[in-house]
Image 1: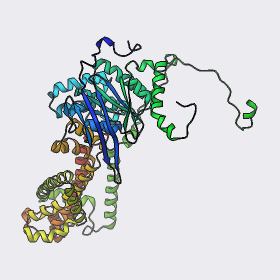
Image 2 (image 1 turned 135 degrees about the vertical axis):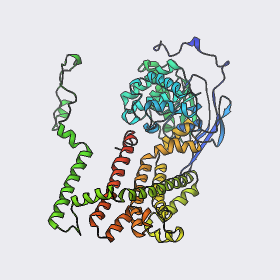
Image 3 (image 1 turned 180 degrees about the vertical axis):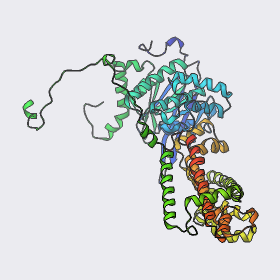
Image 4 (image 1 turned 45 degrees about the horizontal axis):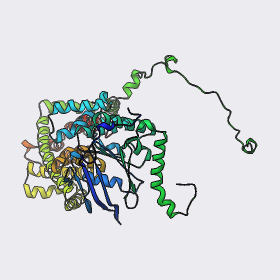
Length: 280
Length: 297
């Protein structure tokens, strides 16, 4: 099943029948540094449907992380709007749980289990006992059953990220936001985590927006890929990758899409540099 | 091609056979972890090493005092312990200590409360931050004991004056450390907290306070040390009505009567309480909090 493409086409809703879950409409984002007012993205529009693994892909400086932060509600767009299920996003909230790149996103004073139950208890989603059961079942899913009572500082980087994923999924968010969650991991662990994430999606079926600068990671994880150009971030292309998964690495289809995206991202460079033959 | 490379001083490496090993035929390697020898384990316990230092110091004290042979100026350890025992059993030492502790607890508690209010104001507004920074910059270098004459004028001879100077010595140390702890909480952790839906007071209590706990604990320790010293010093300065006097008063009183072993016994009590709070109370708080959380090695 996985080799042939991840989801059976029969399960798919047609685009005409389904309504988008998240609508990003002409969003311009700016932030201030001490000296400059930086425009991170310029009139970016896209839609995310429920159940999609939506990847924001681009080189550094294309505003993909800023875009994700705006969806999370940490900053407001200067122009355009972001709506989740018809409601404009105004502030951070647990319906958009976020997994960060940094390992210190876990609360060091709570155990692994305590970290996963934390959002459930803070939001009074369920009583403590039920929350713990729920958290344990999620820790099972990310293969951390044995570490439920450990404190985060005793875990490896990959395990910390798995706790963060379990914590985010425990809230059953409308959309899961992931900001380069595997970028700080070593290459072997990263590949394993990518495969696990796709497997987890197969099992749980959540909506995820995933930020990365790695074309390969985008193809492995994404069902749809938004390619952004840098300075400021603008939409360059929106591609389908749902026929590709971790099992397809090295196949001609995988390599071709990878090369296509590579060319998309680097054409600007060739135009500004002197023309070079043999590239693109 | 090979000839061109051979000009280098390093020869080309030989091509060697590959190795593939099946791990389950390797046999046992021996113990993966072996326990240390008893002596090594003992030497790793801080309490044991500290006790050793204490014993050496006690022996040195006793030896010097006997050699000097002047119990009026420098009583020996045994004389001091004897005076300590007498003062504790029949004398006023315990009552005096309790008086001191009661005043200290009141001052410390009020100091912490004010520090909490100050830092909450400071984290929520920018002008609050400026207010706290300015006040701590002004009052932190000012020894609390220097305010005692003024306090005596305002509050008279009694516990209020003592509490006032204790508050002064606790407040700034705790507020300063707590605030710097709050500001050094990582951006990621802050965003993780807001993402979960924490806002306002719940954000401060459930996220900032535990995240800044190492700094807060440092502030509490510094505040305690300041308060304890200030209190003893203040009690030495003014002879409160002798019935409600504290440890400092006990020391002063006995010096006036040239009961030098009792003076030493009073000093010993000051040290013992200081040691107990530092190495039992605060140490055990550390062990169940910041050490367990891996926030301090």
